[in-house]
Image: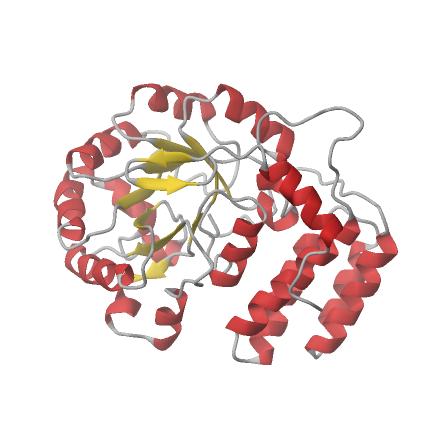
Length: 362
């Protein structure tokens, strides 16, 4: 596999990138209003770089433990790495202790992100049970001190990612935003579900639009942005300053291009095929190979991404079975080449599924 796009695919990408319009949220500049959401165990430097190459206006790292940063845990510190070719990336940290979070944020900014982000939305029990993630939404009166303590030693902007509230009886995103504004937070990303919803049901876009129309801070809307057409429609009518796309990018790596406004619907509209997806897989492999130091980790990383990339094509079940029987990276690459090239010019057909990535990934 090679770390290059073909001239033909690059021409498609460049054609759609012409529709990108840069924006500024607070002091942070992005190349488009479509941003990659932070996803646990996914948004490492290789994947973020790939998404930026494929049109993402900005990216955010996977959530990184403040305790691991302060303890200088080797695995945690590697999660702070930013590829020199990345341009619009933020590092997201999580934790419950404001002083440890402040120390971790100071370390994180040493890796030269465009901004540091506080995770206040993760619904996973092991994070919430210790007071981090969306558990921070339960006691908004403590947030003023929490934000100010973290921010005081930072020279880069500080942002937050939240949910609409803890549960349906405690929808308090507006209160959190008001506090954040008074403490110098730069912008807020909101996932349109409560913590108790996790990833079930539907994101409450009526609430997100209502908040965005009166917010003292720039708002990034997040949730249920699964398809390019849906994203185009939302982007053309939203009160949000930007949109954040997570799980959908795993199955459609071109979604940041397809979701841009002013797309042609004529016969010469750009379509991406299985062969294009295969090129994306090759590009990701090249990025990962330079980043991962063990073949076992590379094997796991490629296997999971290939299965997501294969969604929507024929014979995916057989492909998945073959991948999991493969014991080395060479076999994984050959199986993938045979699968994607056998699809030819086929296009994806993906159905929405509440079960896709229902865990703690966004």
